[in-house]
Amino acid sequence: MELKPYDYKIYVTGPFQSGKTTFVHTLDPNTISVERPLSEPHRGEMGTTTTAFDLGRVVWAYKNPGDVGLLMSSKEYQEDTDQYEGWITRRIEVRGAPGQLHFRTIREVMMVNANGVLMLVDASDPGKIGEACAILAETKDKLGSIPLTVLANKQDRQDAASPDAVAEWLGVGQCYGMAGKDVVSASETMIRLLLEVVGVKSQSGESSSTQDEVVTYTAQEE
Ligand SMILES: Nc1nc2c(ncn2[C@@H]2O[C@H](COP(=O)(O)OP(=O)(O)O)[C@@H](O)[C@H]2O)c(=O)[nH]1
Ligand SMILES: [Mg+2]
Image 1 (cartoon, rainbow, N blue to C red):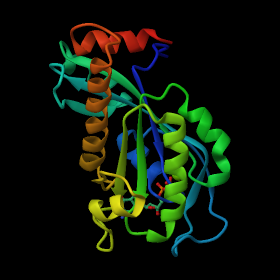
Image 2 (image 1 turned 30 degrees about the horizontal axis):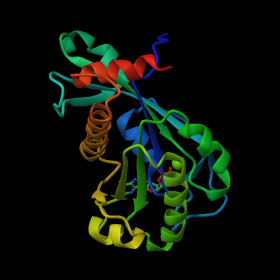
Image 3 (image 1 turned 180 degrees about the horizontal axis):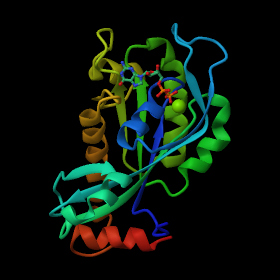
């Protein structure tokens, strides 16, 4: 059992059924999720809903600071540690929050010490935009100073709106497309945010020269 603190904590938010649980499980199949079955079908499906959290553990490995590198589940990394000798490795806790508006207290706990935010929106469900706007406002209010990426999720669906359209729905400057059930798309999304997290830290003057020193500073913070 490792007790080393996480280097980064990424908070995953968005409305009910936007794909948060799926996304966290794509990155880490061993994610721990607290869910219950839906009491009524949602868009024709009797699925589940998160009532507390999804907690995933991933490792970001790269050879040089600034590299895109690779993202893998913590388990995968443990099985192949030898392969990454000499690489820089960062442990990431991925915290999926419950999307239903009344779970605000749980969301607040999940936000503590977050370093970055991914906000998922189901691009095929414009009916949820009101909720998405409410969650975005709440998140910006609490976590306004850390990197936040808004995602037009479920881009694999024919009826998904484009990232630009979703950005317009929400009134945000930029939105990226994603299919959170696809490991390539999910990893690319997470790495893009992590690069921003590292970049923002190195610009903020919290530490001196290299990005790595900055990362170490964060790990010691707790
Ligand atoms: N087509 C498609 N469906 C998805 C994707 N991600 C999630 N879903 C579906 O959307 C529904 C809600 O997903 P879930 O991860 O439980 O959403 P959450 O409430 O935000 O945690 C489920 O039926 C998923 O199978 C995706 O990338 N593409
Ligand atoms: Mg969920």
